[in-house]
Every structure is written in structure tokens, then in C-alpha cells.
Amino acid sequence: MTDTLPDRLSSNPNSPYYNEELLAKGVGIRFNGAEKTNVDEYCVSEGWVRVTAGNAKDRFGNPMTIKLKGKVEPYFQAKE
Image (cartoon, rainbow, N blue to C red; front, side, top):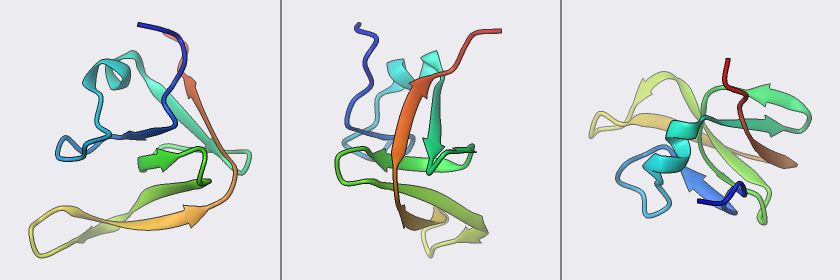
């Protein structure tokens, strides 16, 4: 396993971009210079993140997400 993060990563197990091993290491997202803790999916090359929209759910019970565009900087969180 390398220390580089993929261009696109999702925390949803139903997504083709889900990677449990990377998520277990602890991935943090800096979006437009601010730390985001509610990111569901990101794409660095396209410059967007999907964040959960409060407690709203879709008709299947999945959390609703909002796509935000800007500068995305993923990183591994330091182990404490």
C-alpha cells in the first residue's frame, strides 16, 4: 500500500470508488482551505466534494448530499 491517495474516493460502500483499507487509515479533506468532516465523496481532478445535507434522507434512507466545487486537498490524518 502506498502513501498516496487516489484521485477519487467515497465513504459509501455501494460506490465503485469505496476503499475500506484507505478509509481505515484515516483520510482528512481540506476544501478551499477549510477542514471538512462531513465529506461523503471527493474528486481532486474535477475539483468537487459531496457533503451530507444535515439529517435529510432520500426515499431509500440514504443521506442526501450536496456537490460543492473548489480546491480539494486530501491527506492522511495523524494517528494520536
